[in-house]
Each structure stands twice: as structure tokens, then as C-alpha cells.
Amino acid sequence: MDLTVPADSQTELAAAYLQLAVTLGLVVLCAVLHRRYHKAYFGLWAIAWGIYALRLGAIMTFLHTEAPIWLFWHQVTTGWTAVALLWAALVFSQRISWKGWYLMAVVLPVVWSYLAIYVMDNFIWAAGPMVVFLSITTAWTGWAFFRYDRLVHSPAARLLFVVLALWALHHLDYPFLRAQGAWNPWGYYLDILFEVGMGLGILFLVLEDLDQGLRTLTALSGELQMSPGRDESMTEAMLRRALALRGVHGSALWLTTPEGGRFVQGAGIAALWPFEDPPDAANRSAKSVCQSGTPLVVRDDPGGGSDSRSYHPYTAGLPVLGDEEVVGALVVVGEARDPFTALDNQFLLAFGQQVGAALSNEELQGSLEARTVELERLQERMIHQHEEERNRLWRELHDETAQVLAALNLQLGLVAERGGDSMGPALERAKTLVGEGIKSIRSVTRNLRPMALDDLGLLPALRALARDFEQGDTFEVTFEAPDEIPTLSVDAEVALYRSMQEALANAARHGSCGKVEVHLHNKGNSASLTVTDDGSGFPEDTHSRLRSRGGLAGIRERISALGGDLVFENMNSGGAQVRVCIPLEKS
Image (cartoon, rainbow, N blue to C red; front, top):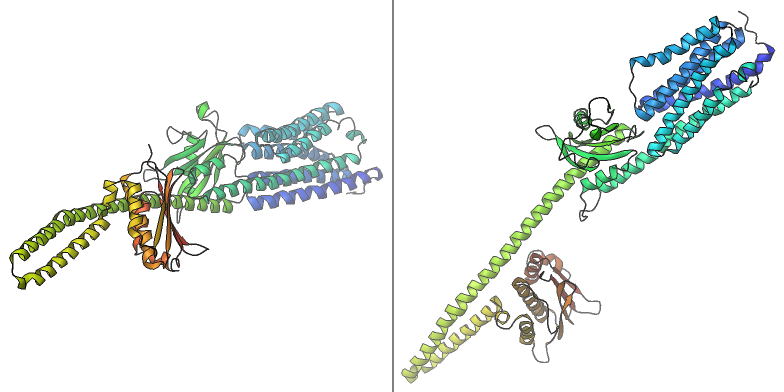
């Protein structure tokens, strides 16, 4: 076989070898992407560029041998390349499924190439239909990327659309220019530019997908770390954030149950799924993901009898993983071919584990909040019972024991009047002891129940309490308050009285101070009491001791039960300060 290249074909052959090197580079690129991300369309692109490399091999062999068989295979592989690129684009943009009649597009290049090479004599009629087929197929491929760009606003898809549209126009010049040698070798160089543009577009798609997917899923992860004090729950924030994924219009959370599972919450067009029948594709996707434990994207069939209102072109599911098993699925619906883009399944599974952990944390947080509320109610009930017990003791001591001792004191006086002089000293001593007992009981009853609150009201009772603690020049107490304060509940009045009482007692016993200032004022929707002294301040271990014992611990329990705050601290200028803030009663 004579493989000598004619002189006029050497330039064309050199350009063909250059294009073959570029094409093989695209084969390697798409094969590496397929191996890395396990996406079908990368593998299809690798096959398409592989067929294109065979096309170049056929034309180069024809230039060496001028045998018609190689021109025939050149025409066949040219048509197959266009069909393969179109198929890869449709799988990428629409996840289209294979149907038997698509074989017609594979058979057509073979049949027409045979007729053009071996049967027809008219060049225009032989080449024209094939050129039109190539141009339409290439333009269709560009349209697939144009439609994808319209759905998700992809600059990379826009680049591919422009490249393919220009390539489709370039195909039309074949019968008039390239076949006559007018584009030799510039036609090859132009094809190389189109191939490089396709390769860059594919790389940009991957980078764009990675950037968009990582940014969105990172934002989702950020929602999972939200602070417990926010009004929006973690599930609501996660579903709302999932709507930012490409082409997604609805998201819902499916949780497994002993009966199988169900949607518990939704957002977007999936907001009503927990309350009405969701689309069959969503149910199937959620169940399949829970069984397999891997992400899944399915394309719904518009002709499958689905209600048009519940039809969504694409449904994707992401497993939500617990400690040892799949506990549910995050399901999204929309128009994009793959809302999770080119991200690795390992990344998506790790994210699913984070979602599962966040759901568990939210459940634990809910249980903790419920337990906290229960403990607060128990604490409030205990304080009420404690106050009732104090009132009971106060009544027994004041109404019974004190009265008995007063009667006993009276009887001792009568006995002293009737008895002899010898019994006088003993009776006087007995009367003194009884009087001291009565004073002691009155002191205890005053501490058990602030009678001034019942008799005078809060402001006079607090002023009286300040006067009771004053000790001339050695311990001065000043009290400042407005003429009137808003209405407080009985428990709040008792809590303020006890707080001032305990703060003054601490200053008198431990503060080594000579002056105490008490301020009562309204602060927004709360009443605030501040007690400041000029003594030595609180010991360093006051906070640790407050956890288990001490009068301030009891005050803190009272204030907390009312939804208020207790703060005590040492002042920079010396001395200590106790601040109590209690919400006002809502009118």
C-alpha cells in the first residue's frame, strides 16, 4: 500500500494531526471528569470526542491512501460525533432517557454516507443533506445549553451555546468552501478553536457547578449551626436555603416512621406536601434514598398520568443520616437537571450526616427547652408553696403562739400582784423572759411575712424597711423612688421586698459599710431595684456559693420564677451593687 502523501495534502494533514492531538486531549479531560465525579454526561462527552478522533483518523488515512472506504467512515463518524455531542448535552441539561427510535439518528449517517460515496454522482445532492443534518444537530446541541442557561443563568452554558451556534453555521460552508479546498488548512484551525471553546465550556461548567454547589451547601451548613434563640427553626431555615439551589422551586423534609415515612415540613411549592398528597415522584425519590442511602435525581414523565399541578421535571433526594442509619431525606423539585451539580457523593453524604445531627440537636434542644419550662414551673410552684408555708407559720406564730405568750405574761402579772414578796423577783424574771420570747416571735413573723406590704403597699413598705435597717450615724440607708409605680403582681411585690431586705442584710452583716443607697424606678416594661453600698464588696467565691446556698440564691429563684434578672457585682470605685429587674404585669 502506497502511503505517500501528495504534496498538496501535506499541509492539510499537518493541521489534521494538530486537531487530533487537541481532540485526544478532550477525550482525556472528559474521561478524567467522569472518573472523578461519576456523572454520565462526562462519559458521553468522552465517547463523543473519541468518535471525533476516529473521524480525524479516517480522513488522515484517506489523505494517505485516497481509498473511498476511509472517506465513507469519515462521513459516518462525522454524523456520529454530532449525534453523540447532542446526546451528551441532552443528558446533561435534561437527563433524557434512551428510547429505541433514537437509533434512527445513528443509522442515518451510515445510510446517507453510503449513498453519497458509492451511489450519487452529484456532489451538492450528496453532501447537502448531510451538511444540513450536521448543522441542525449541532444547533440543537447549542439549544440544549441555551435552554439550560435560561433555567439556571449559567455563563458556562452560554459560552457553549455561542460556540455551538457558530460551529453549526460553519458546517454550512462545507459544500461551497471546504470541499473545494478554499478553507485548507484554515478550516481545521477553525474546528480546533471550536473544540477548545467546547473544552473550556465543559471545564467552566464543572467549576461553576462546584462553586455554586459548595456555596449553597455551605450556606445550608451555616443554617444548621444557627443559634437556638432564633425565631426560625433549623428545619425551616434549611428548607428555605435549599430553594437557592439551581433551578429548585420546592424543598421538603421526609422522615422515616414505623409505618414507612412521611413529609413533615416543606417550603416553596412543596410547602403543602405534609398536609396533602405529594407527587408520586417525590414519594418514590424519598423512599429510594432512604433504602439506598445515596443521593438520587430522577426525571418525571409528563405523560405518566401525573396531575399537571404536581408535575415537576426533576426531583432530587439527599439522604439524611443519623448515627447508624438513614433517618430521612431532603427532597427538592425543580427544572435543573441536577441541583447537587458536580459535587461528590461523599460530600453530599457528609452533609446528610450533618443534617441528621442538626435534627437530633434540634430535637434535644426542644426537649431541653420543654424540660427547662417544666423546671421553671416546678420552681415557681415550690416558691409559692414556700411562701404559703411561711404564711402558715406566720399565722400560727402571730395568731396562736404570740397570743398564748401574751396571755401567759398577763397571768404572771396577776400572780405577782397576789403573791408574796418572796415570789416577786422570780415572777419578774419570768415576765422578762416571756416578753423577750414575744419580741423574738414578732421578729420571726416580720421576717416570715412582710406585714407592711399588706397594710401599707409596696412603696411605704420599702421606705419602712430602709428605716428599720438604719442605725444612726453608723449605718445610713437612703431610699429613692418615684411617687407612683405601675401595678405589680403580689409575687413581684414580695420578690422586690425580699430582694431589698436581703441586700440590706448582706450590707449590714458583711459589707463593712456606712452608707447604702436604694433606687427603685421603672425601666421600659420592667421595675428595677438597685442597692449600692460603700463597703468591701462581695467575696470572690460569691458566685460559686450562690449555686447551692445563701440568701441571694433564694432571691435569684424568686426573680427567675417571675421572668426577671438578678445581677450582683463589685463596683470599680469600691463597694457592691445588687440589681433586680422584674417584668411589669401586662394590662
